[in-house]
Image (tube, rainbow, N blue to C red):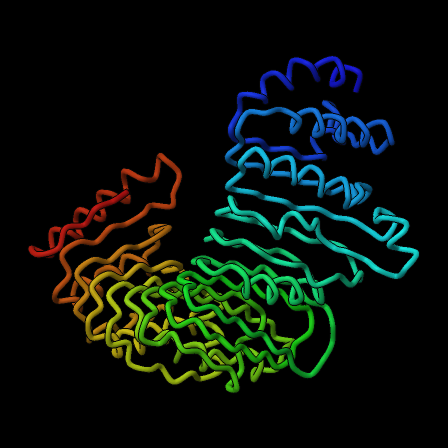
Length: 417
């Protein structure tokens, strides 16, 4: 670590002219031989380095500050953030882990436990903010929020702090357009209320990592939403509501198939209805498996133009036929996991697909039979793009087979890639 200290003057000079700063305490903890050195001097070296780096006067556009050792006082983090904001930061990525021992002793003695640096919530320059919070079971205070130009907010955290922070922040970010919530929860209860309300929000990503299955009730008051990405072990229940049906253009679903959860908690019927008007849809293999297990009734996707479909279970490919039957305007179909399709041909008879993309094509006999079936059934098909998943010496053989297949069709071009 002496080497680091000797480099401080030079590094500080170099960083003074950088617009993007990435400061991570584990860069100091791990030595060149890969071993961890968790001494007090190492932690102090990181503090000194950050202090010197942020003490300059040149403008900073982006700051990534990651403090994971759990020993840095929140007041010190707050000071660093204030210095960065004074230098005009517009993109702040702050992730930290702390504990009660690292909090202000006077506040701790009073039973008051602030969880975040106050300066994070009050800025006239921040356009993008990322917060990663890991503080165990410590409860926090409701922060005063004033972020008048913030457009993108990304939050990572655990309960109950996460819920407390994001609900308060949404009220005072008037021009917010993008929200990403990465939330993990290990508490047991019968149901969870999950409200999201914002009038200008256009992009919403929810990654809900829960250990115990329960009823999830989402309340989405987001009338301007155009993009919705939901991932989690449980799906929004039938009591959930939304008001973005007419505005939504693109959706992604990844509902994990945890067999220990009741199928009622995994049933994606409600969220499937929410996205029936989208133009672009992506379904993970886990989602397709759940749709098949829950016997989801597929609604009519009247506006769907592009579908990305993934299935690594034979049963899941039955869902593809049901989707194609209910997607009269579908033009582009992206398929993943074709090597797991059943030996009998997947029925895609009713469709108007013009572009077919096959991802990770391995070149098995069943896959080639399925491609032949697609060429025969997709009457409007113009282009078939095939991404080869094979070693280099095998690719020429697969390409030759694809060319032979292409010769059978005068209207469709097969493009290996």
